Amino acid sequence: MATAPSPPRVALVAHDRMKPAMVRLATEFQQVLRRCELYATGTTGERLQAELGLPVQRMLSGPLGGDLQIGARLATGGIDLLIFLRDPMTPQPHEPDIGALLRACDVHDVACATNVASARRLLATLLEAQAGS
Ligand SMILES: O=C(CO)COP(=O)(O)O
Image (tube, rainbow, N blue to C red; front, top):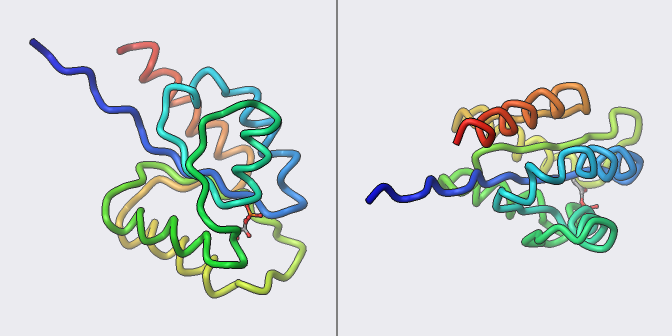
C-alpha cells in the first residue's frame, strides 16, 4: 500500500512591520498552509495562531534566538521552505541571526522567499502540488 507523502515543512517569519502582510498572505493561502507542518518565530507564530487558528510550532521570538532555532532545524533537514518577510527599512538588533538563517537556506539549497511576491509564487507551487496529489 502506498504511504501518503509527508506534508511540506514550512517556516514562517516576519518582522514587525511585515506581520500584517504575513497575516494577509497566510489568510490567502490558509488552505495550503493547513496541509503543511508549520513552524514560526515566536511573535509571528502567535499572530498566526490567534488570528487564523493555524497550528504552528512556535520557536523563540526572533531577537531572542528564534531565527537561529529555525536555522538549526533547516540545517538538519527539517524545513522544506522558508517564508521570511523581512523589513528592509528597519535595522534589527539580531541582524547576524537573520543573515545566518538566510545563509543556511543557501548552504542547504532550501527554497526561501523574502518578500510577498516571491512568497505568493512559492505557495502557489505548493497549492499546485497539493491539487495534483
Ligand atoms: O525577528 C524576527 C525575525 O528576524 C521575527 O521574530 P518574531 O516572529 O518573534 O517577531
